Image (cartoon, rainbow over all chains, first blue to last red; front, side):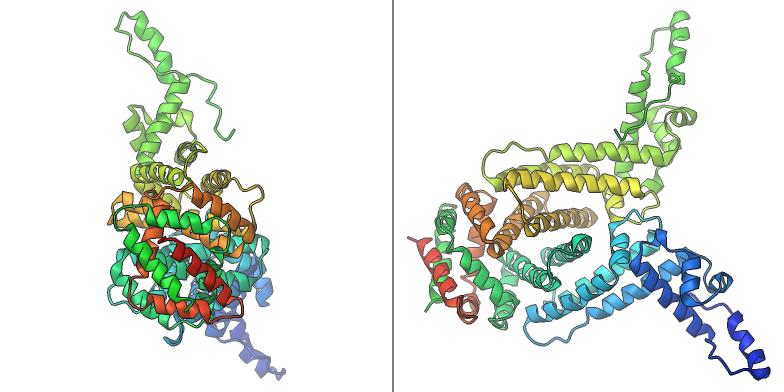
Length: 286
Length: 286
């Protein structure tokens, strides 16, 4: 376990509660050692989500928790430890959001996951940005490890949903690169919030479908998997909308001619492949 | 300018040269203050390229430069300053590699740039990795600024080549996300070098073309630009090969049927768009 063991002595605030009760005062609910520790982490996470770590002090955390500075130090050796622990919790929370039942069209599963992911990004904005932008004074081998763990969890989830027994290096790289895309896209979005979050959510999912298709175009084994994945998709889902958006490009003057020339004009097997494309798109209107 | 002014006192090693010559010794070529400073930066860059900054000491740099430890400190206050300066130089060198004449098919320009970029990645491998992975003890606001500057230079170059007067937020985001893709792809490649570099180079370029196409499918103004960009492409270039690879997918059992259903089965304008696609792919075999 990555979390620290609570200090063996009890919460100084908790220790006073017995004497308070003995004095006949209305018993104010005191936090247990574990509760206090969790409360401090929750408060720290809240503050670190709203501001970069440089701008959060132990005093801020103590004030927000209704605790004294020494009490915070009683639980955590310093700000960095509290930062890393709250980051670990945030990482666990984020990874948990990637969990999704293995049911229904793949793009719709990913669409739901991205909804939860972007909701996290929105609610943890500045802290998320400070962390991923790097160069923060609070960045360390530990914080990098937490981020990498979240990325690994995301990659593992996606590969689980793809359900391909032995994913190729190319496919793994596609998934990893798409995760980087999702990160940078959310970071850029946080900077100006210029696009509705729902649009970002749809685009990221469609970019995943496109990246998967591109990888399948290079890897025959994956192409078969792509066929069965596409067969499960709904016309009104992210993939269906993507297919129609791309088909719409063919109505733009010049695109048909250019693609035709590229498809037919290459090496010897170009013509046969162009034939396949024609057959396919022809079938699309039957 | 970001670089430091050389110290006003001369290089201690340079100062001894006059007395050496006076003593009738064969005049060994001494470095001027500027030359010595440049030499130290070059040596540091070489070492920081081969190892993460934690594993390079001032003694290593002094030894590799044939200089004494005090001499290195005479020029730089410490390892961090030397690291940041050599990183700045590396950033300038990398940004210079993005420069490419505004001539010929777009994908071939990008292909040449990516060749130079990947060559840089290969020759500065471990240092590049340590820097971009983050969490290095030598990461700072300054090193982050250098990396961001290189990313901005890359984005600016790409937008210059696209030559679109007012690039949309969506297009800028596409370019930025693709740069993140290129970074993470090179990092993953450095970890196992499992794929020939030429393959990576081609894939990254094709992923850019695909990302641009996807963005154009959402943005009518960009679709017109896409048409003229495609018209300039050569069948044997990265885009031509991509078109034929994608056309090849239609020969995979099930893909035609799935895409047909998705194209035709959606909202009211789906059928018209599928018509456009059919017309296009039909034309591809005429």
